[in-house]
Length: 140
Image 1: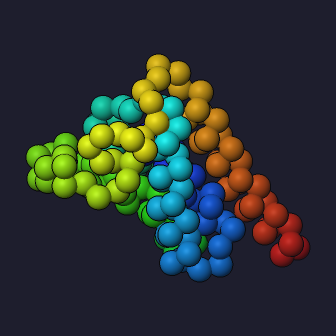
Image 2: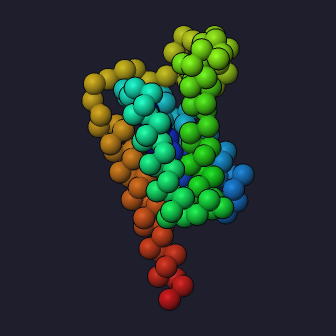
């Protein structure tokens, strides 16, 4: 999955937790699940731009001290080792996250279809926006 999907999916799961550590862990777990789905990846510049935009959106909507933000951070953290590998700072066979390991056994197949990613990000964004509206209506 592209980084923005991992970011928004992790944030959406963060809405269901009350603590930042649980939100972070939920984000990491969601990364493994999302990576197992068929998807395609983007080039590094596109990935970085989309991740920055997604993290910025979550930070503006929820704040950087929220479970949603920490879920987003957890969702994208496993890709740090992938970025380090692409930059040549670690060897590919040194990766430890299950869906990033060499044989690709746990990684979803490559596909030209963007539907899995579009659906995942749309549902996750809907959860984030809906959760905000529910919290606002309960305050009134």
